[in-house]
Length: 138
Ligand SMILES: *[C@@H]1O[C@H](CO)[C@@H](O)[C@H](O)[C@H]1NC(C)=O
Image (cartoon, rainbow, N blue to C red):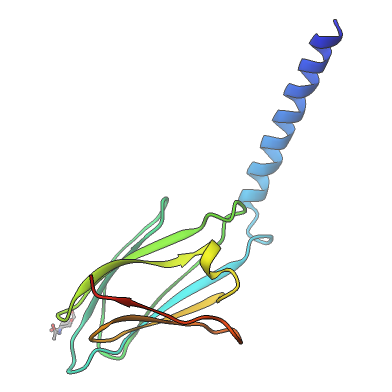
């Protein structure tokens, strides 16, 4: 009898937890907003082609004209697993890189700035003491 009650209580708490988690996940006011900005810094007027995706979203293929910027913004999920990866194609080289990864970027940037150059893609932190890094063409 007691075990049955405990089991019912367990199910009730589980259902409660799942519905609260689902509600939190939809609440954009509690999740951190971030954005990715990619600037075309290729020499001699070359275009950059970029295709960004997450597990749930395909942002499509975009052309970044010389000196122009492509950007997108998003809300981090409450699980801390937000990941956006982009394929960058240029006449100098190409590659597929993580442009936003919560575990790597949470302390680096909420505005995450990238520059496409002839050697690859450089990531520039926008917070004091944040780390910069560089993706070579693959
Ligand atoms: C860059 O893209 C634009 C728009 O798609 C196109 O008109 C232009 O010819 C392209 N430039 C080069 C160098 O490929």
